[in-house]
Image (cartoon, rainbow, N blue to C red; front, side):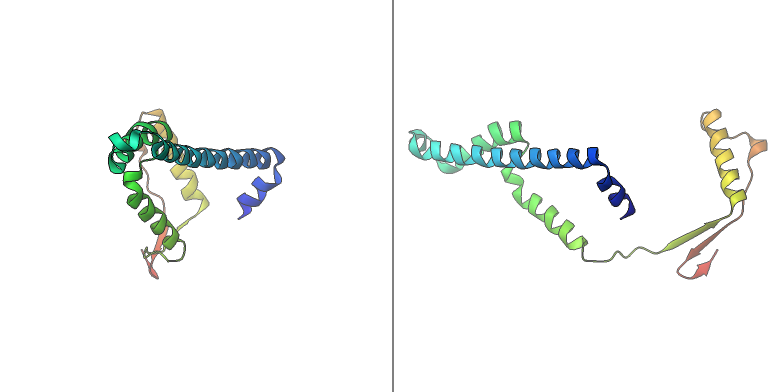
Amino acid sequence: MIISKKIKKKNFLNSFFKILNKIIYLVGIFASLILIVFFIYYNTSGIKHSYTKSLFFEKFNAKILNNYLGLDLNKSKDYLNIILINFLNNFTTTNLENVFLELNQKTILGLEAQRYLRKKNFGEIPSGKILTYPANIKINGENY
């Protein structure tokens, strides 16, 4: 919440997101217009006599929608399942355990020093410089 408030205060980012939103909206309108134009073209031209609707739909989907718009209507059930799962996950809680890690300042500095040594030695810490630091882990009310 704090980050989103800070982002909204920035005029540049706010105008950028408005422009991005308009671009996405226009791409959606463009895709819808392409679908409408091609279905009108199919019904008014002689193509409907040489191709069945399902064959025309498959070719239209493979040649135009999939290649140029990145939309595959054969996978519409998958798209709807993803949208449904994401929608339901907004209202359900996770079954993950809460893990609390308590570190003091000395431990944080020691871990940072080990990270620096690992980076300096390309992933290996020399055997004489491996140290352990105190930390408390609390899982489901039990301390380890």
